[in-house]
Image 1: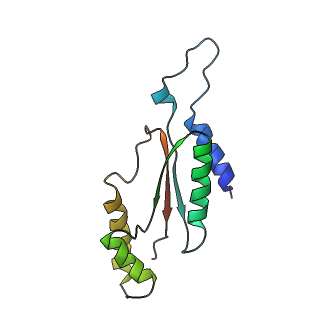
Image 2 (image 1 turned 135 degrees about the vertical axis):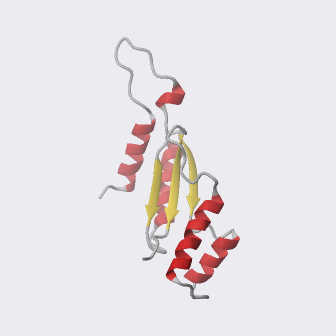
Image 3 (image 1 turned 45 degrees about the vertical axis):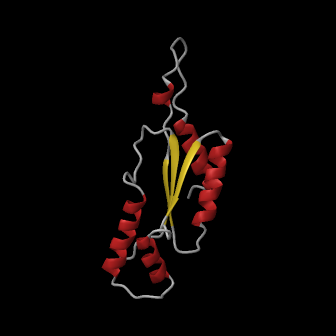
Length: 131
């Protein structure tokens, strides 16, 4: 299993683009640089937020742009319903909570998966969906 440091190193290396060959001009910056899309999934209180913060810090130190999103996003109405479920305040059918998790990601962003052409790294922290 790769460490967070290994993951960050690989993402930074892949976003810097290939080195130009001798006698050739470097690729345009927009074509050479592209960000990594990284998703950390794990149980509640398993350290996802800590690992995302470490990755974010590493990318910033390397001069990369980073967009971090954590799910569930408890600041939205759907996120508040999920939060109540996770705190055992309410009971829900497994299918319902699954749909709420999905809706929570969609309400946070109209384009939840960034195009590979973006030059910033995108980090997501998710709770796994139950089956």
